[in-house]
Every structure is written in C-alpha cells, then in structure tokens.
Amino acid sequence: MKIAEVESFAVSIPLKEPVAFATRVVEERDHAIVYVRTEDGTEGVGYTLGYGGADVVAQAVESVLAPMVEGEDPRDTSRLWREMFDGTVQIGRKGVMVRAISCIDIALWDIKAKAAGMPLYKLLGGHADEVPAYASGGYYREGKGLEGLREEMETYVERGHDVVKMKVGRKSVEEEVERVRVAREAIGPERTLLMDANGKWKNKQEAVRACRRFAEYDPYFIEEPVMPDSLDLYREVNESLDYAVAGGELEFNRYGFADLLREDAVEVIQPDVTVVGGVTEWMRVAQMAACHDIPVAPHYNWDLHIQLLAAIENGLWIEYFYRDSDVKAFDDVLTYPVEAKDGMIELPQRPGHGVELERDALEEFRI
Figure 1 (cartoon, rainbow, N blue to C red):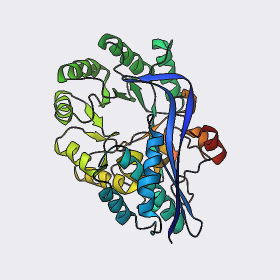
Figure 2 (figure 1 turned 180 degrees about the vertical axis):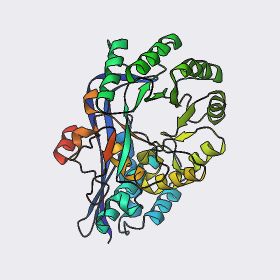
Figure 3 (figure 1 turned 90 degrees about the vertical axis):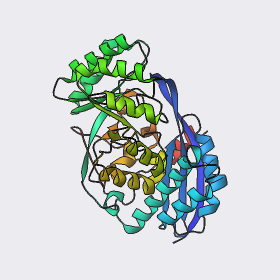
Figure 4 (figure 1 turned 30 degrees about the horizontal axis):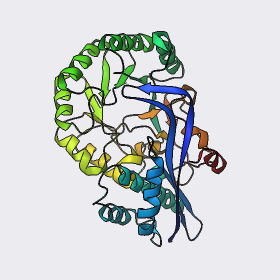
C-alpha cells in the first residue's frame, strides 16, 4: 500500500451570529481539510480548526509535508510522524506545522483502520464501546444575559447531561460570580460544573482572586485560567485552588505535555488530536498521563476524540457541542454527525475513524 496523493484546502463556515468567550469574538469557523489517497483507492481524511489560519495550515500540508509522505506506506504511522516532525523542526516544533502534521497523521490512521476493517478505537486497543460527554456552552452573546444562560444550562440537563461547561472571564469578577451561581442553580447541586477562561487572567493575583470566588459553587475544574505558555503561573494557580486546573488544548506534542506534568501545572489534561500531532502523538500523551494517574478530557473535535477516549483507560469526558447552540459548525459538512444520548456517545462501528465529509458542502464553504 502506497500513498498516491495528498489534497489540502481550507473551508470557512459562518455562524448565524457572533459568539464570544473571554478573549475573543468568533463569527466563523475555519478548518484545514486534508485527504490522503492510496494507490488502491483507500482514502483517509484529517482536519484541524484554523482560528483564522486554516489556509496557512493547508498550504503547509501541500508545500512541505505532502512530498515527504507521497510514495510511502500509510500504515507506517510512527516512522512517518518522526520524519515529518524532524524534517520540519527548524520551522515547526509547535504551531502551524504541527497542526499540519496532525491533519496528515489523522488521515493515515483513518486509512490504517480502514485497511484493517476496524473502527479506529478497536485498532488502538478498545477500552469502551461508549464514552461520557459533557455539554459545552455558556458562551457570551449580545442580549443573552443571566436568564439566557440559565435556560441554556437547563436545556443541557433536560438532554441528559450530568456534566456541563461554561465560559468565564469576559466580564467583571462580580458579574462572573453571578453567572457561575446561575449555572449552578440551573444544573442543581449533584451535577458537575466545569469552567473555561481561555487564558484570560494575566497574573496570579487576578486568576486566584477570581477562581476562589467561584469555589463556593463547587466547580470541578477551571480550564486555561492563564495563557498556555505560562507554566510557572499555571502551577501557582493550581497550587492555590481547592479544585483542579485543566489545560492543554493548545499544547503541541509529547514534549509540551511532559512539561505540564513535570511542573504539576494541571490535574486534567486536554490534548486535541488536531493540534498535538495527530493520533500518533495523542496516544503517547494519554499514555504518559496515565503514568501520572492524570485523566484525559480532550478539547473539541468529539467526532474524532470519541475514538481515542474509547481506546484508553484514563479517559474522563468528551467535550460535546450541540449544533443548535451555534458555537461550532463542523456538523454542517459531516455525513454522519455524532449525537449524544443521555450524556453518552456510542461508538460508530464503521472502519476508520468514522468521520466522513460531504464534498458538496465543503465546496460551498471552501476558501
């Protein structure tokens, strides 16, 4: 089996209206899309969220990485990962190039599982046939207010979720405390509340002051209280709180996660397969975390992450967004959108990683 062709391009899917978190307003969701095709006609797909740079990632795949893998055996995922990473170390190591490596690696594992006639999670080891999902939301919108937040959280509970997540950090501490209070009231005392600040706070005083104010509402974790490269600050905040700090959605490769774990900076890791270096590197990170008894709750991309979480023993939750929340829009190009039922997602049994994209829809949104 040999790789015959690599195709890469970018799409941008608009939201119906702008949505915001602590540090940014979002009007569209752009993704780099990668297809890897073999000489026998097997096709694998990979992708990553672009945050405004999807076309740059797609160009990196086409101009730098594709020549490295064309003509190679797609099943040699470990060797090809190392060759792509080492071959771009001067211009990569993190950021755009590792996202590009992620896209190709995901596509290679899709081919590998299809060639084996197995769903990816079974090929990777198979630990569970369904995974728990938390409802992710609590974003900011013009005119939403506290009652809008309450209604949203109540909807997630009605849909069967015992774990929900909300955004914090965009407003004053006093206003955010009120938002957290309303969310806790909406879900009740027995359910699990998660919070995400998207790197909002700039120093220990700001972060700890805010997070301690939230403590009376019994959050399970605060995600990204500070910027992802501030490891000392991460550790100081983690040491100062009675509940967990989570992070890692913007961390690249095993070496970045080794630093997080070595510094005791987080108690829950959130690797994103489309960021960290693909399936090859995601599994290495998850297994390294298992050595420290650290749970894994991956960021976004539930369509892919269900396969990975179902293959490991230290999986915690899948992050799941309902399309009607109009926060994530990737469902619009999927042939088989994943659905949560009573807070659980059942693993599809299609060979490969299970994600199939609608080419007509991709063309509609193509950049």
